Amino acid sequence: MLRKISLSPLILGVNMLQQDCQLDKEVCRKARLARDPRFDGQFFIGVLTTKIYCRPICPAVSPKEQNVRYFDSAQQAACVGLRPCLRCRPDSAPRSYAWQGTQTTLNRAKALIDAGVLSGPEGQSVETLSERLGISSRYLRKLFNDKMGISVKGYNQYRQLLLAKQLLHQTELSITQVAFAAGFTSIRRFNETFQQTLQLTPSELRKRTAKSQQNHQANNDVTVNSVNSANNSIGVVALKLQMSFRPPFSWAKQHHFYQVRAVSEMEWLDDELSYGRSFTINEVSGYFSARLDASRHLFNVEIVLENESGLTQLGAVINGIRRVLDLDANISQIDNVLETITPLAEQMSQGLRLPGVWSVFEAGCRAVLGQQVSIVQASKLLNQLVLAYGEERLIGDKYVKLFPTPEAIAIAELTELKMPVARKKALNALAQFVDKNTHAEPDLWIAIKGIGPWTIAYAKMRGLSDPNILLCGDLVVKKRVLALYSEQAEYNDYDYLAISQQLAQKSAPWGSYLTFHLWNLS
Image (cartoon, rainbow, N blue to C red):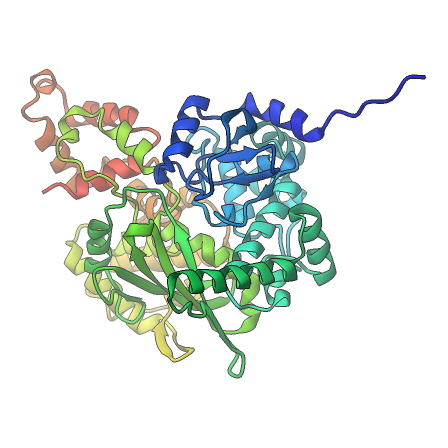
């Protein structure tokens, strides 16, 4: 009688995914043994003996190489039956978009899913998401299976679980609050999925976290403060999270960039380590304050939501903060590409990132106000716009200004702004278009009178964090480029267009970072 033998899905899955790993195995081995933070989130380490997966910076004793497999994403590790390490907590790792710049559709789909379009009571279907992306649902599913080894729904579910795990670890939100904040519509479904996938219940994870904090306090003789408070008596929810990044990080230059363009009461920089601002997303308002902890390669971030119903948008808020601060950039890889541009290499600032703004509409307004004027004048106009048309809210114990809505600017007379009438009309027309076409791509703005390629490119670079926008039409960029190449004999007979085209090719897919490097040259 023949006995049926079932091969382990763990081993089969690992062998299959190992072939597709983006990073060389020897590079991964050296990175994990060195616990190099520059690789944090770029790959994950699966330990077959313990059936867990870790970050490269995990403080646990390093496993033997023969017991290790490497994965491009946490989702891939989970697909083959591995569970996240409770010590290094992969849910807190910076994200890594290995395909960014080459798989535009997948990147857009993932960004929308990360923003919560498939989650919550009003979550869209995969078919609706596909229509929004302009592709078939079959092709979208194929993209995820081929590039990530996971289904669209599977990716979204695991993303929700990692967010829930992070909230359970770092906050004192109730398990019910955590479930809804992570995008689940049923507590029962949340508990079942959590236990099935992570192999322990949410309450068990909470207990282990509390015990770990007590041990940490006893071993280090320090006080472990609560990292969350929810003032439900007035409906406000406040929580604190740690958001990691991969070094290096040129925070001083990014901080200065924010400072000279800051809007009073909408943005604040209390000292050289902090930045905060108000936000509105899907009718949920609040604010965040982020403080750099350079030694631990993270920001301590406080998020305050106007009311508890806003928890359904918490995932989107966290993604928005990470994008605005550009915490997920593989900055070493980007710097390595830009260092090949010989005239720039000697003057580069290592770790320079993209300082984002909260929405592409806000970025578009900033661009219109900044047309043909100095940074100082543009900042003055922006402050006047927000002061006149932005709504003031008391959120918790803090009065903040919210950036004006498209509806408000669409009908605004803009008499407070000392600028040409044509530019005021362009601002009104932009707001009217965005108000009527909420999800329209900024490229469609070109049909609006007074909106040109520079304005659209700037909006995409800062409002969508598009990584490959080289603002060749920017006067400062042009001045800096010509200065860099003026002493290069081989370029003496070239015009600016030819030089900028070569720069775009050399810097791709990181043209936006080159733009900021050029802006930061003295």
